[in-house]
View (cartoon, rainbow, N blue to C red):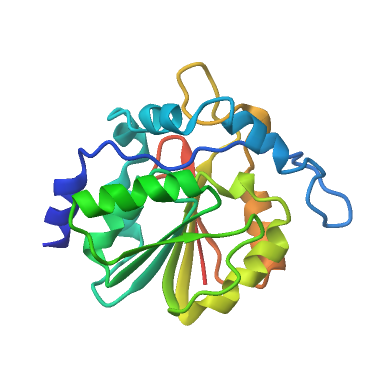
Length: 233
């Protein structure tokens, strides 16, 4: 039945933030590369919110984003509370909601949250809460989380180690974090995603999560053609 819910939503033109943050792959003394977050914001805001929604609502996105496959890796059930950080226009949030008890769609942009709420209302999804969060992550989450999903947003975060230390406070002891982002070594005119210099390799992401005290980190580079999926407990 959960599969049917996904298939029913599969054709919806709903998109998630695709933001870009320039990141130097080399680090000194274990610190994040010194490229401020406003680089990513400037890149993203070259387009209006409406243009971003239209662009990322292109049905062709489903061919490479493979939302059903991504959600299947998360092993969801109807008792769970899930947060989608960087929900953007709700590409994943609106697919997640029918599968779980509570879905928190979080973003730093009020305009995207308004769009997600409008879409949730039109689809009669009453279990979606939108949450405006600061750039350094949520300050408080009322419901202990079973899953956190962050798609195409990791490279947009500035002080990532501190950010992901904070996220650990809001997730259950057995909860799982999933990060989906673009592989640095796959580029070309027909490859989706940000420019090469804005991409982060999965080794760097794994190292930063370890520094933030996440455990049992696993990297999947096979499910998606242009992206990795990182799982951490």
